[in-house]
Amino acid sequence: MTKQERFQKEFQEHVKEGLTAYPKYLSSRYIYDEKGDVLFQKIMALPEYYLTQAEYNIIDQHKDALAQIAIDEKGIDLIELGAGDGKKTKVLLKHLNDRKANFTYIPIDISQHSIDELTSSIKDLWPDMDVQGEQGRYFSVLDKLASYNNRPKLIIVLGSNIGNLEHPEAIKFLEQIQNSMSDKDYLFMGFDQKKDPLTIQNAYSDKTGVTQEFNRNLLHRINKEMDANFPVDTFEHWESYDPETGTAKSFLLATQPCTVKINAIELDINFDKWETIHTEISQKYDDRTVEWLAQQAGLKIKEIYEDNDQLFKNYLFIK
Ligand code: AVI
Image (cartoon, rainbow, N blue to C red; front, side, top):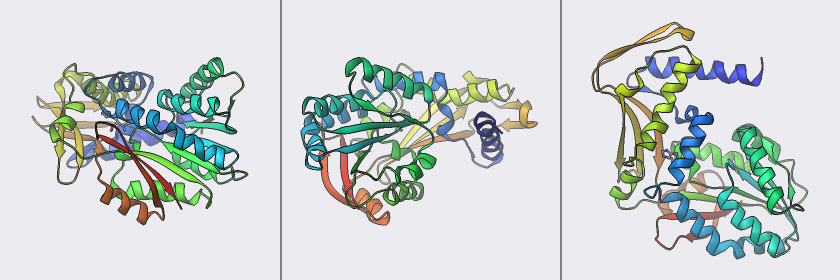
């Protein structure tokens, strides 16, 4: 079975399980095809989606402290999980380059297309930079990390990607990174913070409707890839943020009753009016919660960095 066939099988099994459950759910992991990637780029440029700018501000303010790690260690492997377009990372790369630090940049992403684009844009900017992109899923590529042990690693995970995981999965994710780290390694990770609930609500339900399109892309994909007939416009995006737990939840809401045929998996699914499909969580954190997650995963917080508007934090962890 090819990689693509395996992915399709997994996707079909997930759709069957999620849409026959009560209440119904689908994972946001499947939003990201080519169109989903473009929609997420658009979200990151929205004024309401403060996360990107806030983390950019943190990296810009603290690039020197991060570059110092490479200088002190006399060389590092800079490994980025979920690199995407690398916009924020380029601020750090430029600074490392300016300070003549000795490093290899290893961006890891699920999309080969993203890795190729990123590598060629870095080569255009800094032809001599040592870049060794790796295509793959976080968890499978993480195993490989353990073999990059010839010099200290600085592993970076930006964008509060961990927030798309429930706490038990987030701990597992941190644990897997921890397992691939030696005593000399560092992990630099972004965690979006609890804040005015309205700011969060607005970030995930923008007025232009890009977030709705992003969420609906799940249904477009099922239509296209599983020969289904979701009346996509009937499903509205809904966001609810619980300030106590810090969990923002995204839903697709059936505004009319309907029956959907998914031919590839021989399934008919009925939706009542106002029935939901839960599609994503975007967890918001505080220091106590991050400390707890880290401790569960065998990590210690070495440093905490915050943006000027106090919206977002990046934590530097060691083993
Ligand atoms: C990728 N991830 C961290 C984004 C988030 O903030 O949860 C995905 C997203 N969903 C809606 N807007 C952005």
